[in-house]
Image 1 (cartoon, helix red, strand yellow):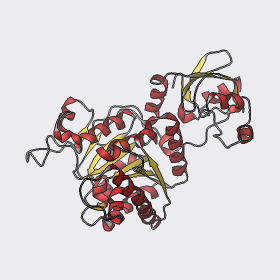
Image 2 (image 1 turned 120 degrees about the horizontal axis):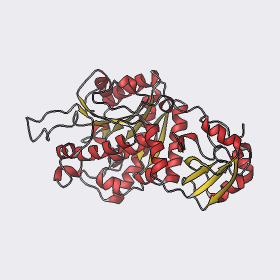
Image 3 (image 1 turned 135 degrees about the vertical axis):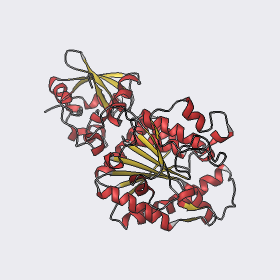
Image 4 (image 1 turned 45 degrees about the horizontal axis):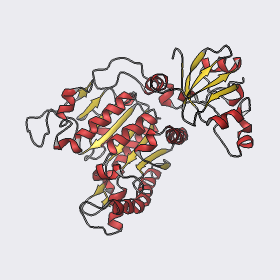
Length: 396
């Protein structure tokens, strides 16, 4: 079949949740792809600059239990600066940007080694990925990161993702770990993001200021009242802490990902949530697949057109990816990662997708077998011109 078919998608994509309103806390066992965000203060003893070994071992027991149960697990971990500043003997307190970046360069090596050893002891392979917020916003980089994450979890590895603090600026200055974790979760089509924090969820008011504040177990929708509970957009409290977590929740639920804020200071924090421990759930009526298709179909301006033959059109309607062999011609000045229209032989729009090649490369690959890509372009490339996961067909 000239159109080809997509590789077996991840479990998160094979079992999308239906788009039905949810008002009660779901069961943790119902999620297939889970991102766990670990902050620096949880992982590293700030006084000694050393990893909290017992805590990390307990968390990795939780991760291993999810992994054995067939879940895809990703970790977004901070801690490189905290570890590196100890090695470099930098003073306590705020650091200059260049000192933070130097500390990150040293600490990233230690952080990767720590996670690799802890997961390896449980029979799990770890893979390190360094990203910045820009990597999750620029489509070319987004596609690269998404493809790498997808391949790692397909091979049952656990990606350990960290901010690339050696080159980042805003992330270091403002500590945007929560929002980065949410972007990673939506990029990876995760159906659950767990933010491990120094508090067990969202309260009606800051609990350290108001002893009468109550924990909110479920947030079906983020509205102005919920944002006000986090400190409001203009308050001092909103510079970090709960406010950044609400911003992360907006990103997550908008991408079809449920989110939890839970207390990470306890040992086995994920097992605690699974057993019904205190936390706050932020719910989404969507799922990652549906949300992604809506984004591709309605939020991106097409930069070109890809015309396909009859065989490819039929393969796409059956759930296949678009291979170069099924393409008859391309139009437009598009770049890799841009949105393009897909048209059948009659000119009717089949759908839209994020293309894996720029216009010049795509033109050279028209009608070619995927095995010829390296010969034609002089370097290996993706077998699919548009992967099914990056495509929204009319009627999807």
